[in-house]
Image (cartoon, rainbow, N blue to C red; front, side):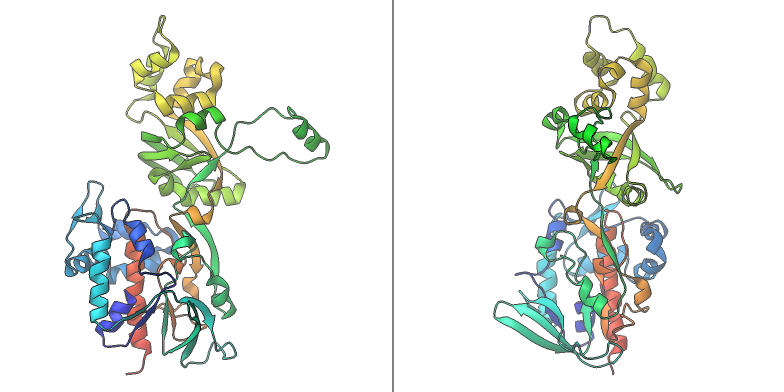
Length: 428
């Protein structure tokens, strides 16, 4: 997007990419249907960026949801608004849009250089505060190459999906230049759940650890029985509630998936930043799951207490409440046999099942990352104050947002801002 802004203004642009082809992560984003942006009004849209709303909102005013749709239409790609308010290309695909975009960029004179991985600057002896050409080093199949540029836009991604190019290797390169970088952390990610706790000292290993004054490691993951039967299956039509230790509250309906070690999926991603921060502060976070959000607690208790005669409890729950499969499985996972036969405990668990998570999944599994180049290290044009002529854009900036089109829109908007910043920086 930065290249397009510059090329339209007549600036000679060279685009370097470490991968064999352009837009690998863009194509991955469109694997299940490319969610370009969201149709909600500007104010709620901007609020999705939480603590970084003051920095992202000005970018969205220049290039927000309506501008993204108009840009796609200009490339011959019509869009539509889904039932959730998300915006997709009419064919749901990323490849046709990317092909049209690259065709236009080439027509504007942008030169693409594939398999060029940035290694940093060749002019390490030059003070970062000095203005002048930037001599960049690239690893290529033919050996190391050196390129000189009047201005540089870095759009190097965060640290997730490293095999597509965004491996975070740029962090020390910018830090060495005096550019402040917040640590990269997983965002829109899954979590490992706390395992079933054995009584203290039950195993010989735990007994010896206690004698030595060591706290046994917290078990992680579901029981083998639950994993065998339900890993990979979705929790549908549930509501998730979470209140952090700082008083931040989350409540939303949706669905997510049980994994071999925990939970992931859209509903979990939506609350992931709060869960991650709580785990970092306290070592764990507990959210509550309403398995029947359309049923009042009183009705659930009444149905659970209803005489079941000769029917099994599982048949009773399925008949009276429609509870079976993974929902019944997670209740047994939490309550055990005795708890399942306690009507009050069972009804309470159906409406507010506590699930404790103890670790975010590794950053490379995350959809996106938090952290990156801090906005305090940049000027209003996204130029690094410690490195004049170097601009940063996209996910490598220190912001995060939920899925739903917000990630891609802010990336595109920051590219526009960086491109305009380069135009203001270059001499006439």
